[in-house]
Length: 330
Ligand code: TXA
Ligand code: MG
Image 1 (cartoon, rainbow, N blue to C red):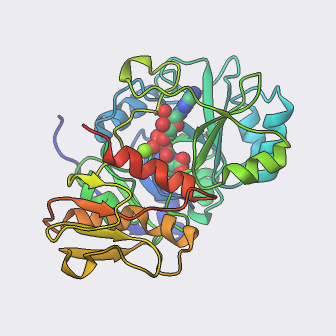
Image 2: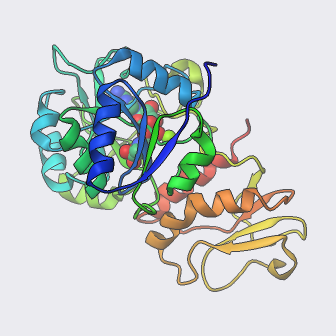
């Protein structure tokens, strides 16, 4: 590792946005809020900046990055919108928490390292005002993975980013907690029927409604070695350090409880710590709380984090996906 950087944290005002654009143009790394989670941005066209980004995250370089742009017309310069599905999804959900994987345009200004040598590219148009302002001020595409160390839970506040990446990146733009709290939904439109690669902030039902068609499932892998076919599907990911136990109806005294809904699991009164994702069983609220609650329970010194069952509908699919990955053996 190189010498530690001084990581500055700036409140998201006009001056901070201009500074973010300057640092990015100089090849630096800037974390900023999006409506889903905080992203760690780098100039998508600058291979060296992208290499520094992988190093800062400790991310395997076969795991490609999402290119973020300010509007759909900028997206069209990076990828082929050659299917009706891609057109429909972009029209319905951009700007917003949907990422489209499309054939890369030729030539494409995004560094090959950012797409891990694939001939497809993941694109997203965030709606968050601060992300929009930075993209417009930078005037180009930014690759931005979630701003956490590889394998840790995604950050939903500037403090989470600082805890994970302090000393490893140049700047954090603090725009307060993110609204959705869970990453974007990723859909691949690469010919054939569109496939759901990652459930996220836009529900499967909403997408299928727009497409008037069922989404295909992504090939299940879990092995780092078939990265080129389905990157980002590493089974163990988004993980707290404390082991996670799922679908818990009875919590042990030395465990911390990740609760959901008005009725707590049996034994909750003796748990080491209890945090409720949503007392009212609201899945949107649960998604927004997921990563910060996991982080907080991770510091409770418990033998395990016991998670109550979450209904597998709407945003529940994305929440269960993240919980399953966080619980996977490492
Ligand atoms: O909400 C989000 O999407 C956040 C915010 C910051 O925008 N970003 C995010 O990025 O979650 P990241 O890097 O943590 O996750 C991106 C996922 C990875 O699993 C990666 O493998 C997948 O997108 N991906 C990127 N390019 C791909 C491609 N060409 N084909 C398939 N999957 C791809
Ligand atoms: Mg991530």
